Picture 1 (cartoon, one colour):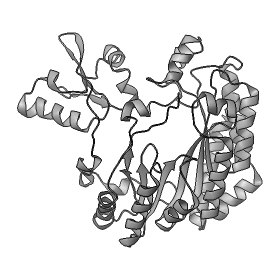
Picture 2: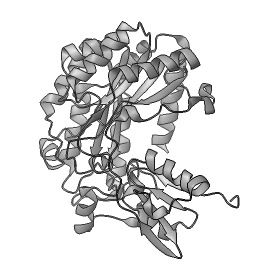
Picture 3: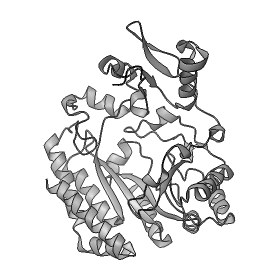
Picture 4: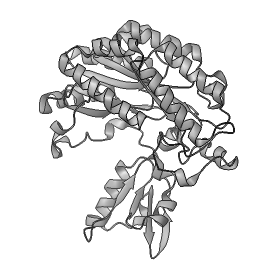
Length: 374
């Protein structure tokens, strides 16, 4: 460690275990809870300029004379447009490239907040339930700056639910088209917040891929995790994406306390039915601040020695019907059975569009197979 360097950490996970981190990780000096932009600015000014007492900086956790102190929570930023754009000139943008095309790529915050009550996700607590959207014109102005100043034409929009407001999405797509921006972008969505007109507008504005939190193919699990979406809506959403010419990425989560083989088999059957272009099968992880963490603790299903061993690939919990090892093995077999379908391999290579990109896909495929085969 360099003497005098202050270590500051932020993010959803540390927001809900700030005291634990400060107790167990002595190199961490400060933790910024919740939305951290204003907290960080005030902290830097306090340390190097104004000398403002740390106790007056909301959203801050720190040590003082051997004690761990927490200031009051900071309120959420009401107008995201008030935040300055990232200082991209401080970094070499050419280092950040799309694994899909190798073109320079950057991320843009489009929205914050999530009104949905999923038991495994801390987003509503970390960023609030009211959805806050940037003005479409401000977002497009940042895109224009990225294109003109850095030659960036690939973007990933960040937002807990990008398509929450149909009106806003259509306004954004119309603004992109009006400016004549030839860009390529992706986003995350929910299966119950899209329609054909929206998807056509997104496609025309440069959207090439949408990620959906499918979570489960079993109605019992969808109900118990409070997903507020149905299996039929999942099937229809992926059908509409294919019709619109937008590629899809399905995220499944399995290994909830009540789940057994029948639930996992339903996940695999749904994955085959919707046939997404990209997919992930993640083992349910008890993130700090979530109802799932409380449930697995109360039911004695968590193994803390497994925490942080491998994130979503290595289970920190078991179910009442399946052991840790069974969950790991099921994930491995499910991914292999989906990746090795001849139809999927052929479609993926045809979608490559060039020999160079097809070679990228092949290398990525072999790399993933080596991981799964151990």
